[in-house]
Image 1 (cartoon, one colour):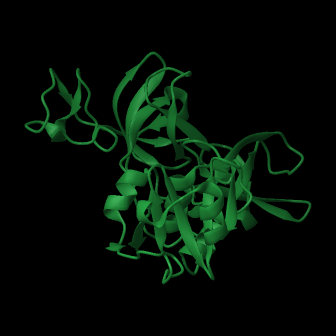
Image 2: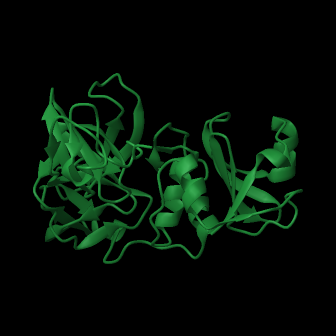
Image 3: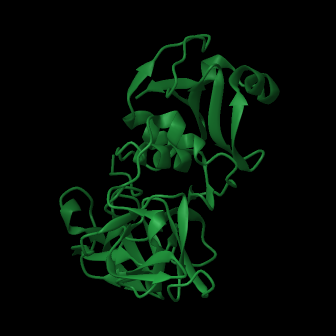
Length: 284
């Protein structure tokens, strides 16, 4: 079976040179290092702005670029290995500089000048890795100038990546956020994006999509009636995943109500017609 093209850069006309001997292609290329220099870069299934968005790369994320054409770059993330097409103006060639700080709030606006009244030029999500080159204070508020020239409030940043005490606590940060297919930030996320973002708050990298997560995270737990669930358990069913929050509650990014929400699991299962035998439990 060929390797999953979501996690391995290969297509009918071109493949990652590391896949030589694994997949057949008329030519192979070594990925060129680059980084994402937009707050949120939609990753598309095809090099077309109307194509499906499958995920987002975030500011500071290191990528490998295998091809560029028609204003798009075919890339692979070095954070979660996801492959897709990004508009070429969202990336900057070359290895990323060493980050000095990380966005520690749920997100931070990037300003044209060191002033909250200045024009907003971008939004950087939680965990974005940034490099500060200068510090300025305006009316008592400290700002850091990025190597890109934009300014972020210093109190939105930390020297180390932000952390949460456990998976459910990390997921709770996103309660009320809008549902967005392919999203994984405060501005919008889907069910597996919520899980991935929550694990990132624990310093753990997990796959992007539900089927990949179910095969990779923790161990399978056989629970027939879903009674003895633990806080932090993951409940997988076809196309969806929920995080156990304890006391019978779950947190999930719900495509029916279009937001990240907390629900009573038993009531939710009754309302949606879900059966215990259709749910796979993974315990991190």
